Image (cartoon, rainbow, N blue to C red; front, side):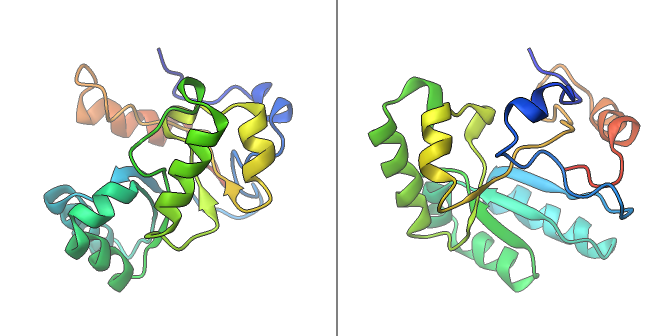
Length: 168
């Protein structure tokens, strides 16, 4: 199950995580997870360039090693890259030690102070340990693009209908 819009009640309960930026500016922050990959990443770069848009790509360390040209293309195009663990590790399913090691391993190939936990799953202890080193970035709108039962048109409407200034 997923929620397209993060419930506002959740945000104060995890106030040390970044759910959205300032609502004062008319800006939406585009983020992409789980890359880079050869074909999809390069296609996204081209689409963003066509619209003069930049984004933040939360990269899996293993994919950075597997697809170095795609990773370099992100950097060359001016996009931000950020940490998304070495191999998309779910924080709820692993010990703190294993999780931290995985995050730091990704940090060896992705130089960023931004971190997004895969699936949004991170424990309070993991947050406490990581927040001194990283800004932990969540989201307030999900497109549901990973779901095979959600059409591209529905993914677009999920974002357009739910984003507001400062949305991530």
